View (cartoon, rainbow, N blue to C red):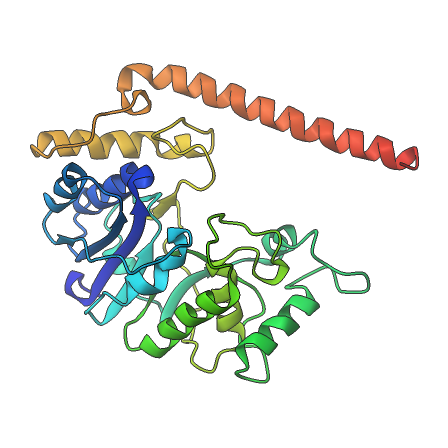
Length: 319
């Protein structure tokens, strides 16, 4: 795959602008020359200018959507006019030239699929009595089949992780089916990334995608290997969860602290403008943020362990 074969797409609002800026600047810093489409909501004129200073970056209009912008993935992918279309969440960066890794090793799509232990953790509270405590809960898989109405045998035994998606643009009917199912199955003004009131689709658009990859006759053939998360080489780093690095560093995210600062140093060296730097991105505070992140992680771990002990005690007391 060459840079001209794929368009990289993302979407966010002004609150995630730093994420979009870091994604775009990291792509260009590492020589990824593919077109980039950023669908933005409530961007200021200055924010638009900051993105458009990078060559090959466009800001297509965002279609009306009252849900969280994470549900705009299909709309973003449909803006691509290249052979391949890729979605990358706006809280990601790349750590090197990922262009050669975007093409699936086989099949027509590259999406990370959860392994057995990760999948069991996702659904640990969803299994019904009598169901096997593994895989997608049987009652959820059955509902997905009813909702999709495609093939008889499941094409996927797990669920997808939707922060990075690469697929052939020729699968437009599948992308449009994903968009239509989001409109049909998710609450019309859903803002949360997790909807506990909708058990079958609690992970919003990601659950809808998993249902389609499992049961849709239009689903593209998945690559047998996901290549964009290998930490020993160029990869897509995902700042999942909160807070984000432009707010406060988490211990997990510190792995990429130097990658972020390197991108900002590169912007300065190239004469590119950046948004005003938060304290999290100032080198003189590096050691302080490492200390804060370590203490925060320890506090979270202690609270979690205390809650487990408390629940165990209550069970022993029959409460």
